[in-house]
Image (cartoon, rainbow, N blue to C red; front, side):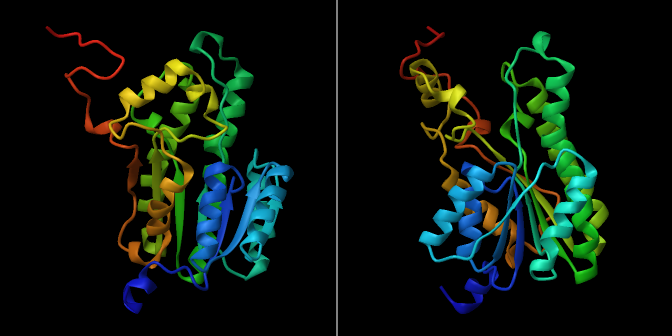
Length: 271
């Protein structure tokens, strides 16, 4: 690859704050950004996950900077930015990967369930982005990358609140991109499909669902966290300076359509 093309996807000299960055997807993204040259500041609610990710960084001889915090309120989001900024004086990239869920039918969802999910999946995304905007504006620009979900587009049982928060993040991406374009801040989102992680284990860890996913996903299998790296990197690298307000689906072809022909393990409904 030429030096010019390499520079378009290099994060050399950039500081990236990755919220929720020690989970399965977050760890893959955090490591990839560090290998691309960024100084990575990893936030997570869990000190245990941060310690595990720190060990992986050490194995790769990469510097690690972990920040444990609960982002349930605006003040906590402001505080995280203040704790992260002194590392280099800049925050060039913000990635919002924080997320939670409580899988229940709508009729069983309590206000506590609703508040717990929306606080993490939407409120913290909103206010952490708001907190980082003046930093990016003052330094001449930046990149914000939200992680939404395929469930922003299609419905599944027991994730009504989760899906609604992800649809809100998808919409928020456009609003922030529009309002902050003049500050040279590009705001985009990734909508992953079914990714095999501990967080999604209740959806795939049985024989029936395993067969269902193989039938339903055109690619024939679930994604792994590493399948999201190239899309994430391209959306925060210099190459994407004219891309903003976009929600990029990475789903193995789910939204491309379905088939009328017989699939494995499922008889055709047509003569």
